[in-house]
Amino acid sequence: MTLLNHKHSTIEAAIASIPHGAVIMVGGFGSPGTPFALLDELLAQGQTGLTLIKNDANEPDIGIGRLIRAGRVDRLLTSHIGLNRIAIEEMNQGRLAVEMYPQGLLAEKIRCAGAGHYGFLTDIGLDTEIAAGRREIECDGRTWAIEPAIRADIALVHADLADAYGNLVYRGTAINFNPLMAMAADRTIAQAFEIRSPGSLMPEAIHTPCAFVSQVVQVDPVTSEQGRRAHAI
Amino acid sequence: MPSDQERILARAAREVVAGQIVNLGIGLPTRLFHYLPEDMEVLIHSENGVLGCQPLASGREADLEMIDSGGAYIGTRPGASVFDSALSFAMIRRSRVDITFMGAFEVDQAGNLANWKIPGKFSPGIGGAMELAQKVDTLVVLCSHNDKHGNPKILRHCRLPLTAPRCVSRIITEKAVMQVTAAGLEVIDIAEGLEVAALRAATEAELIIDESRLGRF
Image 1 (cartoon, chains in turn brown, green):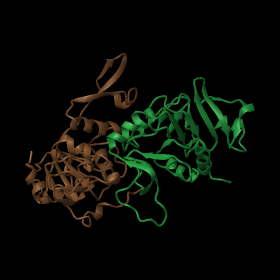
Image 2: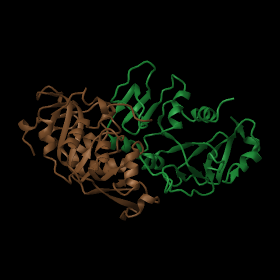
Image 3: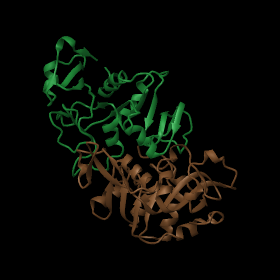
Image 4: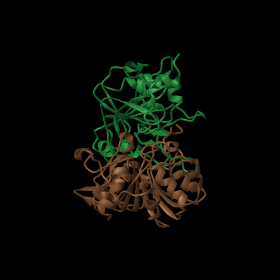
């Protein structure tokens, strides 16, 4: 883990640490909370053979949509890709392997990895087609499915505010998967619109403590504007 | 004459009780907000992580970090909260959401619901529908009574992959309001001007109808 006083990084250096073939969690539900600047830098640097874990596939021309379109992504773990026709086409053509999960199970699998567990037991999806391939066990007279946690090499998250140690504060519905993913990856790179000096954020207002954050990068809200726009619906 | 969708939404609004936590699915159910009394104290849950959302007031500039699960920009009402996705689904799985409204491709007389996948044609992923369907105590389906080719959507047995088994409480279409009971699918209300025989002809499911108690809407 990066030392506290060495986390404030340039975007180039932070993304350069990501190898080809990395398993990467990406925050965001639609546009809010998607770390657009980090993703654009990843596209520019050219890493390929990536596995991405994100709630959705953004839209074709923004966020992870650009990486998918450029052929950089081999595999996507997600819950819904209905707003990205290119991702659906790539999936149907067999060029993109897509694993779909119910949204709450995806969130919980990530939360569980972030809490340091192997997995959890659930009754969600029993007697439906998602039950195929899941291990089930009996506990206290009821049937439960075993849901293994999902971890990653890297998490790319978006925060509204950070401090130089990497403490993070999210805003509005841009919270979504970000705090879960920040805890579930071996290394977490956070972008924030503002990075303040340690001590200037209220301790009880911090969503993700800096212990879970490896690097923090300041991004300009204006340059991220391209992605912060309305959905198609 | 109200349109079919207006008839469904106006009737659906009567299902909501002041003080409830309400989830509105994507599409037609999202519009239900506009049919609730303006001063009604309800909190609308959206599974991307907000309790107490409301449509953006006209003329208000959108906050780009505030959307609902359908992607529309939203505002919040007094008493609102925002939270992460795991917590949002904990709220659902713990049945803290009182009532949810969803669309359907198919629904059957046992209360089985199919609304996420048409094999070979439509499979963008299930999103939050499975957990909402399985865990919210009252699930009201809002849908057209027949598909665009006129085929029944209210069936004896669903044929498409299920969102969840035995999860539907009530079905509201432009033709009828139907309650899923242990005995079968009971018609509560029938649309103004519609004959019982015409309703049966448009429906594949077996309908339990007591004409002496039948309401109109």
